[in-house]
Image (cartoon, rainbow, N blue to C red):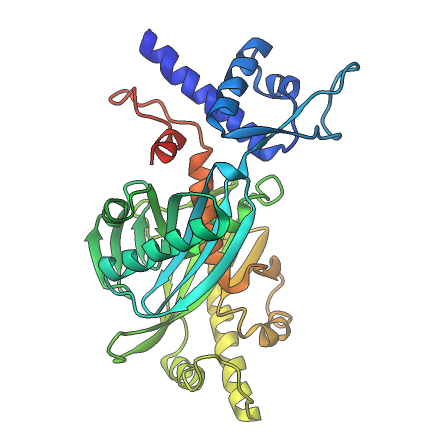
Length: 377
């Protein structure tokens, strides 16, 4: 009985914290009403969260419903309590975003370098974490990493990643041992999806996030492209039965078109160069073939919106015209985060887990909530 009450208390704490995060300036009375808990319980939980520094008192949100009388005190997640570093790890670069616990982006950047093993990657991340703490005076309490391939985010495993040359690696555990903070890993396209729904779950229930990425081998023996899909169903990212949902390859496009397109793109790493009419035709031909091949998949999933990211943003000027020639099935848009959508999404995924109530597990009743683990680091 005592164990049940303990886990119930932890669940209520996380629910209160999540409610505050999603409703900046909310009052204690409003929290009690939304969660169906009595006011004394809410007062006790809020006082504990205030004492731990996880929440702080802020101006009351005038949009909140309140009774007549003294103006309530609003509550918000304390951004100074910590931050999370969101990373996109590719074999020739890393992009990163630092987000405080209130959801504010503190800064973002990119490093051009080869990181094909855990040791070199973790060394770079250690340096970034140290610099971030000095720059913001906010401790980095956790790290989210988005990488290409089949990823089991619940166990922190890289099942298979061809670009990163990884197979069956407990990456999250290895990085935690090196970095000394909790680490979550997720597929890069799924990170893209987590970022898109972070603040829009009430608006966007079923969406499809499409990424186009280019991958170089370390020995320059190959240069290829990959199509990744982040599938959101009913406000949640769908992983599939074997964590391979949305993994699409370049075989969607005829080999000759794909080869000509890659040869053109590879000519300049920045993809910013004047093109001849014939070269522009090569790009249009490739994009048209790609989207025509994707139409059956989009039709089956029937999303309310398709959001394009990755290198689709690089060639975005060619896409609207091509979309007008395709069957009208859904709304299309581009990621507002552009090249940082994966790094932002990996931080968003960490935040999602941070504020998710713990699941009752029969064989592990005393399992701590995730934010307990984070704040012990």
